[in-house]
Amino acid sequence: MPSYLREQGKLGLLATDVWCGLAGSFPRGWLPAKLAQRYNPKLKDARVVSQGVLSAAWNSLSKQSPGLRWVTEGGQFGAFAAKEFAKTSLGDRDVVLGYTAANLEPLMLARQRGAIGMHVQVDPGLEWYQTRQTEQQAYPEVEDKAEIPDGSFFDRVQAEWAEAAKVIVHSEHSKRALIRQGVAEAKCVVAPPAFDPLPGGRVRGRKPGQPLRALFVGNHCLAKGFHYYVQAAKMAPAGIEFHSAGRSMLKETYQAEAARHVRMHGHLPQAAILRLMNESDVLVFPTLSDGFGLVQLEAMSMGLPVISTPHCGDVVRDGVDGYKVPARDVAAIINALEVLRDMAGSLEALSLASLARSAEFGPETQYRKISGLA
Image (cartoon, rainbow, N blue to C red; front, side, top):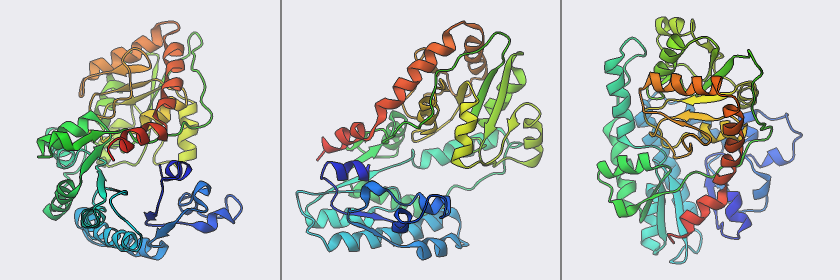
């Protein structure tokens, strides 16, 4: 989005945590991948300020609980960004846009200067943690119980909601959740995240006798519905393979049981994920709660139809480029996979539509949504 704003002549100042300007000077592959990603050549001449690598490295050593660390880091970054914005001619013709837990101070500055303060809430807020906790109580054998973050974290998030002129969410699912948490419906705006299709997409097709290859990508945890994917793998008929990639949050005993039915490739770098997608036929995304689920678009841009639930971004068009199934419905997941396995031409048609669908979420789409609020 910053690079698109730059192209439109609308980017005044970008404040970020780490910006590796050296990445534009070094040959590709010389810098660590994560560091090299903290640079965009389209922003070479833009006004960019950053806290720096040392600050990020120091924060990574924190022994605080995740919630307290997010409050600390968010407050530090918010104060840094507000200080930098205050040096500009910020006024009533400008918009300040920031993200969850790191935007309170810039929003306060925007109000003082008469600018429009917009806030992007990247997840459904407290409800995400409550959903995960409820599922942990129902399936204690799957993962260790995780505590809901300290109240100070949600105090900060709610203060951002109150301070913002508009709260931007990425899905109707998140919008409904925020409204239940007290955010005025008129303040909430749904704007999907900006996405550029990944290279290497192709139309899928199966040869006679070839198994359908299903893939799960994401954290292996209850909130993502991984245990329902495992149940589907246990119950599915012959002719369907189940694969997964992602960081595991599972108990060792459950992971060992899951591995009997799902080939678990572990936590992989992005390039390896793309290779795995290229070798697969369909992505299964059985999430119980997600702010959006960008992996849906990543898979579609590779040509994979997606089986998803309604508890994420509104990407999948049922029967057109994938299937929408109710959350926690293992039978519905299996039925959708059987259709792709058995119906000649179904996989190819949905794959072709998926490639086209992934191109509908470019930065211009998000820009139109956001610019219409200013």
